[in-house]
Length: 405
Image 1 (cartoon, helix red, strand yellow):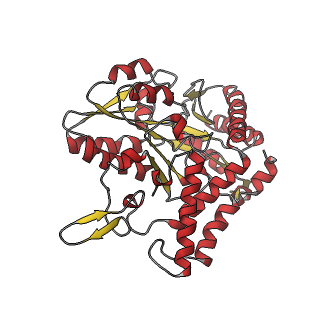
Image 2: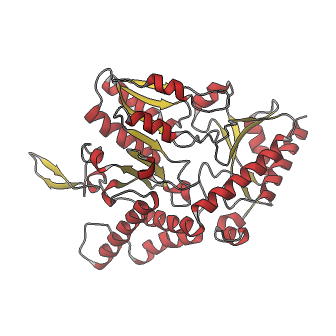
Image 3: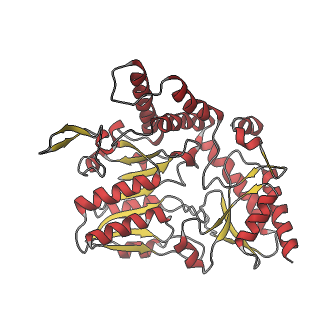
């Protein structure tokens, strides 16, 4: 891996100060910062070849269309999908899940059918399925978790039945960092011919993702989680499923022929990309994938696990600090509370010290309900963070304790 000072120099925002203190950015679970190459790639679109894709015959449109499709190929390669047609650009993870919830629900879900999620899901992988179940008079079933935040596989197996039409689970909990046993979940589902959607919003940036090896039917993620622009995301779907699903939005470019009597739809993947897509975001995402590939996803995973281990050692030594989510398999997230100090008070004091963390339920309220707490403070680390920053966090927490003593 490139030396850490060189890596940090790639990210302009990391060099700024907050309240006169050097920024310590530990909110990577919410969104990651962007390397200069991604900023430059998006800037170049608007400066040099901004034009609508797939619609024009002029040079700018040709260039924009070419770069957009190059980005699709980069995504295909990065997650090892079999075909470019299986890669659909969306607005993000939330947009991708909603697309499947609507389209799959319309085609395959009937009264009395069931969809299974886990207790660790982000709201984006709960609410769309609830809406679909309400619309189709189906039922949402939930895989429970234990006291350290791991899903109970035995209970999952008990939920599987002839009524189960889809499994939708997160790869990694955004709230407490647990890595789910998605391979076992997929294998058990496929033994009953049940398709599986994996929410990769918190998994894509922390290690190698191979959708063919994983054997999932759908995989979704957001560009802004993996050092790319906001407002762009990916829906990977096996061709056999995408070919069966009806479009969830209508408009330009997703059609083959339109009359007032009947419309026929475009080929894959374009039938799911209605209207003017976020082509600058897609191109920026492609550049972000190039960037992390150059660094090496294996090296990124190793470094982040080192940071997690160091942070665990540093923070568990603080009296009164409780960590929620202690799975053996987890990503570089520490979700905690300090004594009886409110999470928002902790977060605001840390902010004044230049330390950016997340406070609240992290859009995963059922997780907080399971632990009987209103929320947590979440520090989420990525490969550009340092042990020195973790020490600053530890010192900051100790300052919070002394202030509220």
